Length: 426
Image (tube, rainbow, N blue to C red; front, top):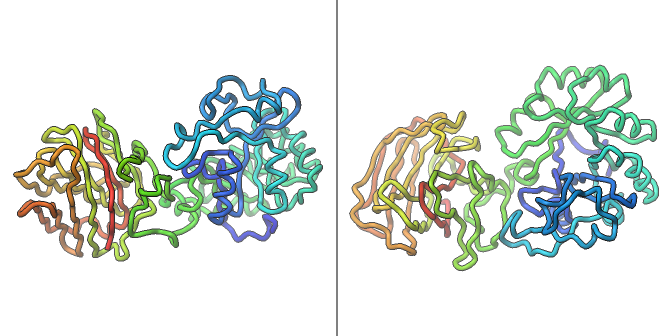
C-alpha cells in the first residue's frame, strides 16, 4: 500500500501511539500495527557516529533510565539504553525495552507499513533518505517530515514526499513542490484546507487525541491526523460496555482530563492516589449501548476521606476535557455523581465545567476504609437515579434532562485516594 491508496482522512500513530504503548519502541510499533494502524510515525536524530536513533526528545532523560543528549550517543551505546516503561506508562509494560535505530525500523516495517518519519535533528534528513534508499523502501510508502523548509527541499529534490510541519504557507509549499503542510490542530481551519486543496497541497494536522477535536478538523477538511491514541481517534467501532482494568494496560481513549491515574495490581483496579485537589480521567473506550437510557454499575473504594471528599463519575455529552478543580471546562456538559466520604451521595449538573448541586443524600453509613462500595447510576430520558447498592435507602433521584444524551464516561477523585473496578454499562 502507498499513501495514495489511503482514504482521506487517515490517522497517523504519533510516536507509535504514545498514550497506549511505550513511544518509539519496536514493541509499541508492533502493537500499533496489530491494532490496525496503517501509518506509524518516527522521530529521528543523528547520533555521534552517524547512526540514526529514534526518539522524540533531544535528551534521553524522560524516556530512559539514563541521562544525556541523544546526539552524544553512538549506535552501540544507543542499543544499551533502557526505556523506563513502568514510569512512562505504568501497568502492563516491562522495563528493559530499548529505543530502536532507524535501520531496525526499516528492516522490520519498510515496505510493510506506511512510515511517517520526522527529521528531529538538523542533520538527519539526508542520512534518513540514504537509509531508506539502502533498504529499498518505496517512496510511495513514506512521508518524511520537518519543521525546516531546507529539509523539505532536500526531501523533494531526492524524490520523497514530505510534510512541512508547522506551516500554513500554502503558496510557498506549492511553489516548492511540497505536497503536504502540517499545522497544529489549533491553526487548522476550513480556510487553510480550502486554500491548500486548491493549490494541490494536502493537510496533516497534529496532535489530536479527542473525538470532538477530530470531528472539528475533519469538518475543516484535513487529509491526515496525527494522534497519540490512534485506535480511539480512528472510530467508534471498538467501544466497550465493561472495564478491562484487570489487563492493567492503557485502553483506547483512556485520556487524562487532569490526571491519568494508575493501575493497582493487588486487586486489578485502576484509580487515583490521595491528592489535595480533584482529578478526572476520560474512559473513552467505555460507552452505553443506548446513551439516552442506560444503567452503569461499578465498585468504588475511597481511602482517606473527609465529608466533602470521595470518588465520582462524570457522564458527559462528549469527550471534552473535564477539569473540576478549575470550575470551568469549556464544552464539558453533563452530570457528576459523587460518593462522599461520609457515605452520602451528590448529583451535580455540569455546564461548561461549572457544577450545580441538584440533590444530595444524608450519608448514614460511611464506607469502610479499604472496602469497595457498589454504586448504580440509572439514566432515562427525563431523570437520573444514583444508588448505593450495598445499603438500604441511600439513593437520590433528580428530574433533569438538560444534558442528553450522555454517552461519555469519566472517572474521578475529590481529595481522596479512589479505586474503581467492575465497571459495567447496560
